[in-house]
Length: 200
Image (cartoon, rainbow, N blue to C red; front, top):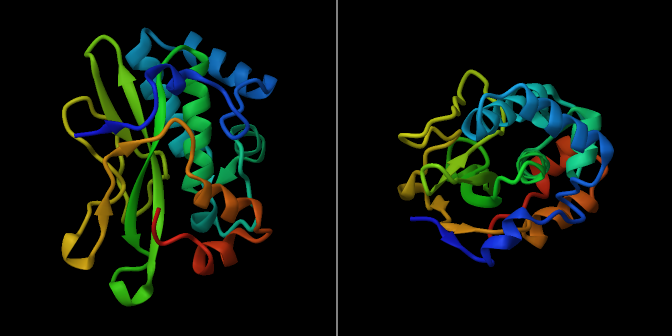
């Protein structure tokens, strides 16, 4: 069960990191909305855009560090923290409440590789009166996140035996630990391997 940390109206607000006031972000939201049949189709299209068209820095070995929604859109690359800011901004611009969620995962396949915090989104579907989680991290051979109204199809399944955690909280703003590491880094690959927070 997801738990809203903030007041419901906060999940529609634009901010420093979820900077939907940038004209490039506003135009992309309009384009995606105009190409959609209804709100659910728009959410699906925005999710697919961020998942597929904005590349994950680690997957493409791109050292650029993006932080805000507008930076992520303009550069076309980012890690999950940045991509979740962008998806939230696109959705909020068209009146869809959206927040940020987190998981604690092993950095590699086993606990001896260390841990990291992973970011994804929660989105409110007005017609169904429910929140769902979507993970726009980006798919690859071992990652298959999809849009689904019936069951979560996230990028990563939690392995409790490895002390991984599925946090239930939905935040209106990204937590400071995730934004600080982006703002204090200039090499996304080094950051990904060495500096990601392990807990929130």
